[in-house]
Image 1 (tube, rainbow over the protein chains, first blue to last red):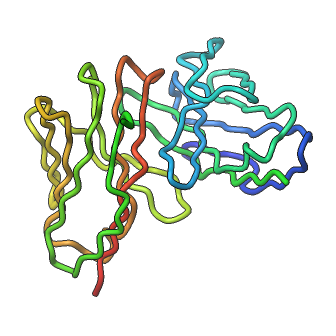
Image 2: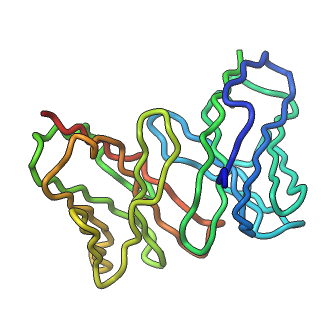
Length: 110
Length: 110
């Protein structure tokens, strides 16, 4: 039982490049989330998915798109990366009140 | 005023000490409250939920004061392994409105 997995763990992009962050969970949870964490700020919700086939914007969705591919997988795409998107990205899934987080992806945009 | 405010610390305490953290929230309609623990460069993990009646889990006690709009976390008999950042989390209307505090850093000193 791996819990929530994320790939890649680290990534460096140049401004304007695109990439997709992958997330998968094996706990059969309906809800999944993408957050970013920046120094001096709390985790901020980018997008969430209450169930397979549905996605909704969170607090900071601009510059991102998501796909809930199936119940297990929830990907985050940066179409044209900007230095302001340098951050640590966490994926999470939830059962009831408790959220389970993946290990994070450290993204640097030069 | 930020929606969720925490003193970022650091709180440096000796082993065996009792330490308390507060977290204030601005939305009086907030419904659910949690403390998460985050170790350095790791993902957050649920420490405990915070109920109106208060709750205790071993050396940890969480309290909610709706009138003054704050939650607290008390750690008794601090251990070196308690060194981490403690995140306050407030839900207002489901996970589309989840707010994390910036976290309070605790360092337990031998």
